[in-house]
Image (cartoon, rainbow, N blue to C red; front, side):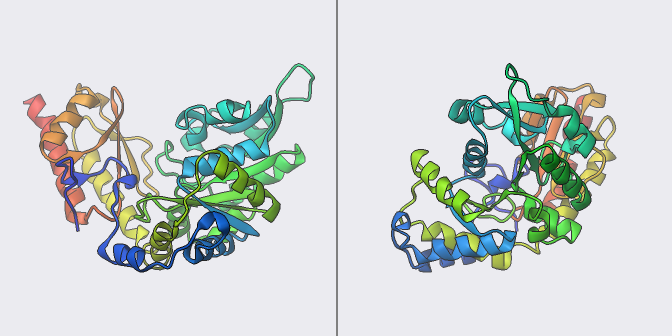
Length: 354
């Protein structure tokens, strides 16, 4: 089912963060038993933390307001001022978190230029600095599952294992940005615990494809998570009666995981239809999960102009650059809706060419 948003957008392919709670999820939130989370007295939040720790095969976990906070707390705890974090050049921690690790932890980021946001063990070794007193110290490797700017590409488990093993040879810690981890699990047929096993710390997001209004859960060794609680409070992440939010996450784990396959199929349908429009190319061409990047340079039109025309027709597709756009499928967008969005895209482009 497709729901119009308050912005007047009938078909919102801007991001899977556009999802809204279903009626069943809202009912679970209303019925949730709650208490003061900071005192360890919110039973629903505690249940969520235990469940995600088990899901990811870690000792403990902590519920946080956002995935960005998960990343920032993890990066600060894994590094010291002057250290360096290694990640893909397209990684969220590098380009989309306000340089948080530099501001909060005094660490630098060393980006690796790589296809689809996935690098291999040799690329990692090339990025690791030799210890010198006048150079930053390589300390942490981050892998983003799935790779957002890589078009929703899935890090293969074998690649993760090789990169993590090489990281340990260099004495580095390994962290997973699990913003769309469960998309990868459903598409690849690999459990979350198997994907998370090579990592020291990992987290899973609930406010994207799983359809929750707020929240992510960071997991790792018990001592690490105890320190994460300190940073949670320090960053203003104390949530008090957070069970109303944790209940949405528990509902999503029960009801919204397997259906992610529908979003993946809808993304492929949209990509196939968009690729048939003269002047539009899917880049990268592989659509593995729920993210589609469009190269509209062949149309001779600016992506912003196309986006504006789509908005007039009630369709939102995000602008990523002068000739680049991004569409993301999710549970609020049906097959019929993505087909209509592709039709509106074709009209927006062909009308200008006429």
